[in-house]
Amino acid sequence: MNHLRVDELEPGMEFDQPVYIEGNSLFVPAGIKIKQKDIDRLRKWNISQVETEGHVRSLPPIFQPDSQQMWGVPSDTELFEFYSHTVEKLNDMMDKISRMENITREELDSLSGEIVDRVKEKQFESVRLILCNNSSNLESAKSAFNSAIMALNIGISLGLDDETLTELADGALLHDVGMLRVPENIKAKDGQLESEELQTMRSHPLYSYRIITNDLGLSDDIAQIALQHHERWDGEGYPQSLKGDDINYLARITSIADAYEAMISERPYRNSMVGYEAMKNILSDNCRRFDPEILKIFIRSMGIYPLGSLVMMSDSSIARVIGVNKEAPLRPEIILLIDAEGTEYRGDTGPSINLLENKSLFITRALDIKDLLALHK
Image (cartoon, rainbow, N blue to C red; front, side, top):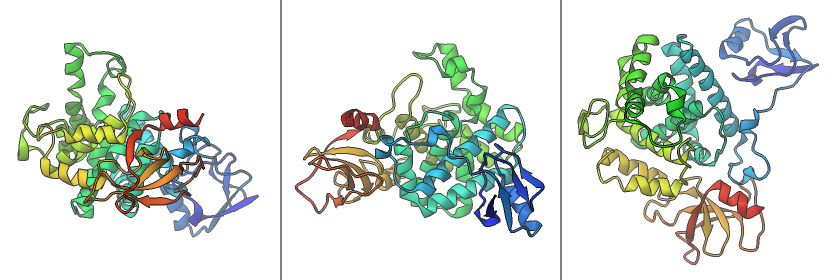
């Protein structure tokens, strides 16, 4: 029998055998995720430990990097597990919304609060993880979570307070919830949308607004982020053709986060971009889509070669970007994955190099994780 302290339990944990309280009282059946309220109940009852014949189930296969994929995944296992468990929680929440079941503001704020705390604690590592995670399951939840992380990265860099950051996370997590009302054949279409299909797709911010305000009964502040995240700085966006400062401030942040996340993620109708290509695309905006001041903060915090980017160096070594030099954005700090002699370093064990100090080495091109795996075969 395995004994676990209540302090060791975390929301989202799942065991392969039933978990009991004091030997014979069932706490959770096998295969059922532990919820925060379950843990709170144990603490209220002054129960210090639970027991089971089983073990914690490992992360689902979609979040289990194989030995080759470890080239792209930072070695922070705790953050990686937080990422995977949060995506699962968010996916459960979206399933509830799709079934027209309610979620409360407290439930949403609780999840957002956890994300805010973790991103504030590990801001750069969280951004790296988005670029490194190459899983393709639970796409809607993963996309929403990635957008929230990117939006918080911008919000933290802007100096927003915790209350505003939580509201920003709420809106970013739900900004595309209206896509649940768009038919699958339109979302998954491989090719150009017909005019009616495009109109349906462009209605998703309105669907998001109605779901957030009517179905879920959440605040208009959150709903406005979702409603306005496709408005453009030049007034050419939708659904209201708002312009400049008339666009909700947190929606302007979410707009950049959403656009960047969409570029670096696989879609049915196109392949993903690597971080460098996505950043070049963002840089070419010229005040059309995005608030230029917020965009400036985003670029400064991310770098031209964003944190987590995989790059090939001038000596044919392969590295990952781990730091940004704001005064020289083309010369970031890197960590070697494969050196010029072919020595392999996994799990962030390679030597780090500041390209601002090492003038003899430079980046020749950005790599996709798939490029690295092909090179390594």
